[in-house]
Length: 466
Image 1 (cartoon, helix red, strand yellow):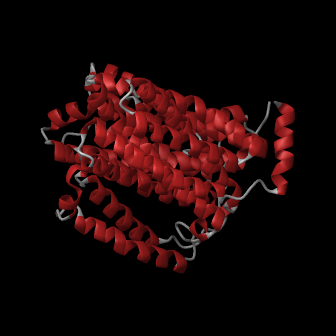
Image 2 (tube, helix red, strand yellow; image 1 turned 180 degrees about the horizontal axis):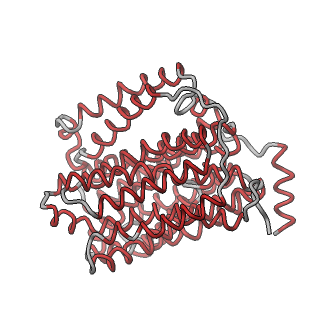
């Protein structure tokens, strides 16, 4: 049986990582159906209720680089245990919340913990798995998100029949299993002599991400220009703009930067981060598929949600497949193919979205395309090109840039749909514009470095074992 550098079975290591990521991914899919129940229980309106997601998104984006840096400084095992522990603590706080404010505190703890789970898990793959198996392992972990969105809504609906508290309590036994197993099998790699923590970088990044999250979340896609002038939008977006150069300056001055400049400025990693933003934009457009189905085919909202199942299934199947291809042909070709599939799906919706067969075909193409962009392929590049001491920080950067793309996509797609008059014509125009924008990602993918000479023996070894 293949073992990691620490002697543990690689299958057991992958199981621990899989369970932890599944726990975090399920939360997104489970909490969505519970929002009406949560708003009713705590007697808050829709605007206040939106903070149940907004606070989670913000802390998730902030938690990714923070937990990633702690992983690089103090080791993968304690960082992963901390991330899972914070998520579990947040789940317990949310379940026992006597007030809406305490619920938000629980959601914040969940977000910061979940932000670290996937980046640290990806770094563990880089530390523990041989080169010819890294893509496969990353693909299996990436497939968790497709699986979560298949079973999450069903599980959430079942738990709601008991009480909304159980959508949070269900995380606790999973977290206990992950902590117990993880403490025994995960590697404890990390810097032996950590340098002073980058406090200024943390503050400026919090201002940047906080401003972007609050500002983008309060944009009105149907009346974009007018909403820009509202007090919950323009001050926060301005704060994000002002904090960006401040963060860049802080990272240049820090002894141990939160996100080292070279993880952004070097060509290969810079292109990967650009592709992460594009992948986030592509993922964000999925949100509008049910709206298109309602106006185009006259179905109910609940039926429209089930009609997005081809996207989820394609992602669940495509992620491990993309991971296997990474080990054989490298990330550049996989990302190029994924970009072409995503572009084809978006353009098909833009041109023929009013026809049902085109909706399902395009949904499948979009799912396969996203499977070849989100998760494994870009993270594979980060594992290979980032230095070991910044391996998890690089994974955290992917999470941040993907999240930025997701935040921007809702406002942009919604604004285009509204400018096109809404209805079928508005949404198809939005997908047409999105397809053109996605096509531009192809130039970033082509710019990626081809397989290096030292990767060729790995590919040959992989081919020999399959």
